[in-house]
Image 1 (cartoon, helix red, strand yellow):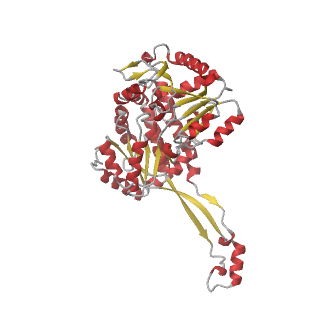
Image 2: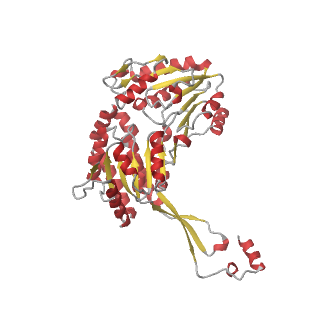
Image 3: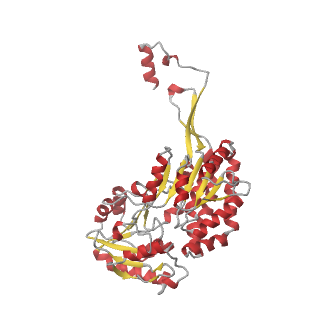
Length: 466
């Protein structure tokens, strides 16, 4: 296990790390609002002073251009810190609630207290954002934290391990690099909360490990996010927004449109428009385009290439095996048992599925596990209301893709197989807090009817006071 820290704080075992952080938490230093704000400021400073190194690491791991790195990772985190600092005092303040007549005179309120020591396990597809965004919430709530970056994004993991000790309070924050063994050792410890972003199978492993200590978990998973395209839509804008949302980060986005549902009569026109947009955004040779990323490693690259076996490719499909790059690819899929319609793609392949009438898309979606995101393109209010009322998803975006992520007032999280719990903005602060219920009574007045010996008239009074 590789532990990053200052020289005076060398620890070699997960249990020692957990105990050290717990000791720090019980000193009370992380509860102070001033400490939380200072640490958030330090995290912003880390980003500001190391922008070039961060962009270089993301380019090394995923071939991300600077614009995508800023949009999906760097700028997102800067805005998240800014929003958190602007609202932290309000989120931390006691939340007043009403007090029933029988408990008067008195007052009731909720007090947000930090959970304690938390474990945050990041994902490789957005290796900076998906690790540090929950970390922002954890620090804002006053917790100590262990950060476990994804080992698949080697350059970013190494950079995080180098930078965090330089800027953050290492009594309260530690970074542990490594793979399965290190993660298993961390999961064996007793944490006050575990936050995991990744796939469903590992999510089950995390939840089983957490169950041993009755540790609460937040699981940000994925699934197959559908994209419904109605006949009554702005087809040109629809195509632009689908292409942008699907092929950002070469399709390696948990909320990217995973497949399109469209009526047979609109299919050809939609495909033609998607082709135009793909050529405009990525050119005739996307594999040579510096704005277009690569697949994280050869294993995932080969997994995606195998998806194309026996698939009807209508656009793209070319590949560069040495660079792990696969073109933006459109495929038509009629067989529901095809792996492209059974497994989360997590890559630059977009299947197009036709339905007899677009209303049938609702039943198609409901026959499958609940998705992390659902996209709907339509001008029809009635159909929009029907989809919203009759389907379930972690988040829904009407007439665009991914854009709900830009609003910190919208909690982000899955439902069913796509995850549990949520974060971003106040939702993240609450995830890493315990809302302690408090009632304070006065000695000035006491209601004797609640005390024994009990009489019928006392019960009558109690019923009226209730």
